[in-house]
Length: 223
Image 1 (spheres, rainbow, N blue to C red):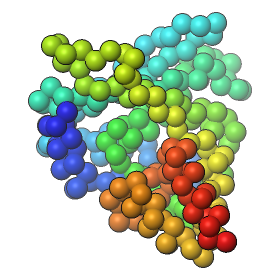
Image 2: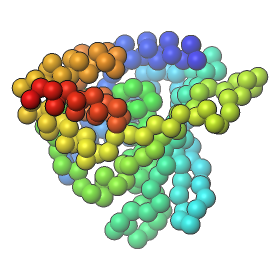
Image 3: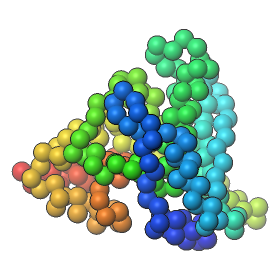
């Protein structure tokens, strides 16, 4: 995956965010169209992507969104997001699925290209409330699979399971960081510990339980 990694690094050196072009109940946000427009710049470095769906078995209907980042060399990186099987207050399943799919596609593209929303850097100091229905819709488990060649297939047992940080814990952590006098020093330590190159920090860089564990420990030691 050397060629893809090099191309992605070149892309991220020039592009680190997508614009917030739409307005919702809680302020502006990055639409699917804006996320796709930001990702399109990757084609200059041989990058492209596909997004497909597959059904998964069970008592209730469910689908997985598969996002594959491709490079002209043949390298690829794949992520899978399990879409919610149903949403409260939505009687029409296809309508609920369409809404969840648009939401998941947007964030899957931003995540796999390493893009933040344009003003995410300022969101640690101004966290907005999120409705319970939207929290439920955004809970996702992503499976990241290494690239496979026809000569050397990687067994599915080697797939790495990545669980995103719970939204409630993330909101609470961001609020504590906002109020902490040691916020800047803590975020500098966080960037060094997780090799984050972004000049400014925002919630988009706080994604995993390990991130929260580190920041909570830093906050506790600062009191």
